[in-house]
Image (tube, rainbow, N blue to C red; front, side, top):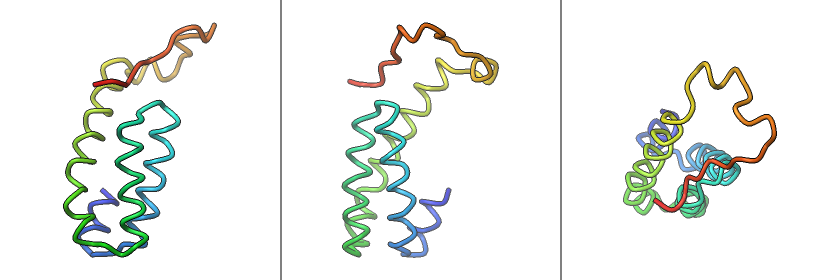
Amino acid sequence: KKLEDFLKAGDMEGYGIQVHSLKSTSATIGATALSEKALELEHLAKEGKLGDVRLKHDPMFAEYSWVLNALAKVVTEEDAMEDPDPDGDSILELEPR
């Protein structure tokens, strides 16, 4: 929502801050395609290239939606309360798509 609001307002500073967070958290969970798209948008926002950000926002957001749906399939609210892998020997694969 915040990304959309900053984009609608043409606020590249705010957009850049939000997309930076998305880039970092995506990389942390292994969603590398999303992280790479967010990185590109972060650079474009820092350069003040609003038109380019508008062109590339929807493809990045589609990837974001895909990641959210993939996570929703494996994590329910109840699961989030418990450690599903106490031994740490399984990995949730988010790539490749």
